[in-house]
Image (cartoon, rainbow, N blue to C red; front, side, top):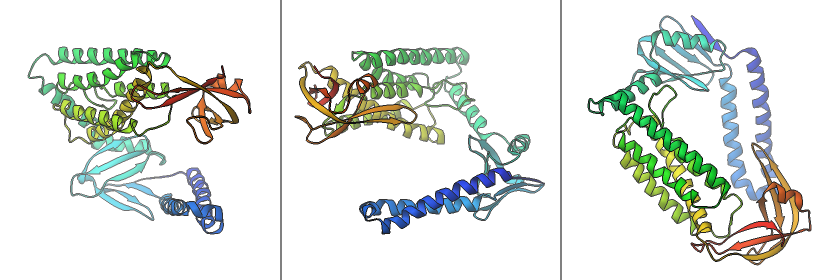
Length: 381
């Protein structure tokens, strides 16, 4: 019999961490009734604190969990969850960053999750690999076999090479256009956006040899990176384009996202739409499409506006740097012609370091090609 559980060091660390979180959220819940300043946000903070406390308590109950493998079954024992799968009822396993997932045949029990932080987890992986299939690898092979079958008996290797060449070429073009779009407000952003529908057409053209997204074991190329680059770069490029009215942005962005989502569905005719990975990727891709739409609308609104700008000046009342995975520089500005109140705006580092509190900055106001007013903050003239 093999027993897998957290080491003593991990248990102590978990108890300390969960204890600190428990104290924080209990304090927040109590202060919602004591501190008058928190009563206005009590409707949000109190439920959030209670939900957090619930999950922290569940975490305490799971710290002593054990996964036990003997000659008859695989069991998970804890104060919260107790499950068992007979060895002959195990269908296979999946491994991700946080868990080893042991899955039974349908109707033969519930899956067992073994944390990758359990002591001896590599031995558990080896035990499973000796007896059961890796379902991720098995699914990947099924997708590959189905894609080859749909080629109609033609030279599969030749078609695979052509599919990879086209996907990698379009990805390279997307990267190049992404760099140009980030550096220059020019037609490059339009060409970058066009890479998204072109990538979807590759799904249809290659009849399953090109996938929406793939696992690391799959030999099939994926288009997932192309829409991601096409959303990331324009949004970064438009970070300092401050929109005054979003009422005309959202309908256009949603319309573009819906159109691309419909195109994705139509171009996925040769893909297995029932696969869990496809469903998750398609949902995530729809969110990316919304970002594609937003970037296209904001960039087009600025690029096709040929009326020029109106110049205003305002005063800096405060400065702030936000540090995290990236550093963002903010200036708080006094009201000006098209802004009724004080507003904190993101600016580039050079402008942030150049101006001080009570200094003047320039506000460059544009009406926008789609009548979506926007402005940029720069140096005073």
